[in-house]
Amino acid sequence: SLTGNVQTVNAGITTTTGGPVTFTNAGLLTLNANITSDGAVTQNGAGAVTITGSRTLSTTSDAVDFLRAVTLNGAGSTVAINTTTSGTGGDITFQSTLDATTAGATAEDLTLTAGTTGNLTFTGAVGTTRLGDVTIASANNVTASATFSAATLTQAAGTGTTTFNGAVDTNAAGGVSLTGNVQTLNANLTTTNGGPVSFTNAGLLTLNANVT
Image (cartoon, rainbow, N blue to C red; front, side):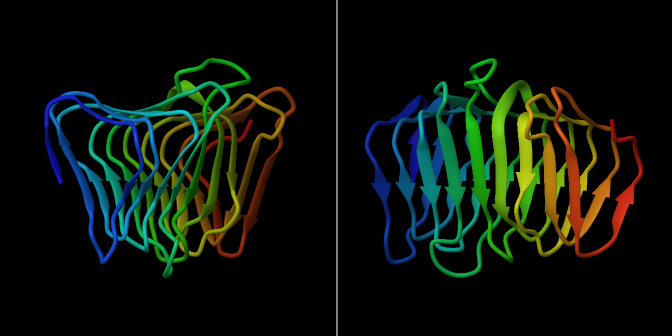
């Protein structure tokens, strides 16, 4: 548990025996290395978060929660957050905004794995600086409350309800592909550059907005 002002992680952090990792950062938190936690990973300070390069944050069905704005920084890199290294998964929560740094084809990619019981929540706008390829490998409920912009958006598996309450747009040929259970679109979905839109819904698909 680290409490302070500016915090920088330049080497991996590993906990065992249920130990959590907590950052209470008044200033910028920069993650330049991986976190492998046997407990929850929590950022609860007033400062923002930057994750550099290709990084992995993993837990054993424990939650990963960011209170403040998160920026991915590393052209062509992929940040992977996985709460399923053991068990059935834990929640992944972004309580503020989530952005890339690099514009265009090398924008930062993001892969999220929350398992069959972990919920994935985006509270703030995603991709004001557009993300690269966003892949939801697995989740229970997925909720995006604000706008969501990425090169592509793929959900490979979902056991609960996937809900988009803000406009979704992608700009690469992969478009949007959502595979899950119940799916609800409450704001417009737009793809460009030939991107298709695919809904593979085991439960009810509800379109309350336009698909373009």
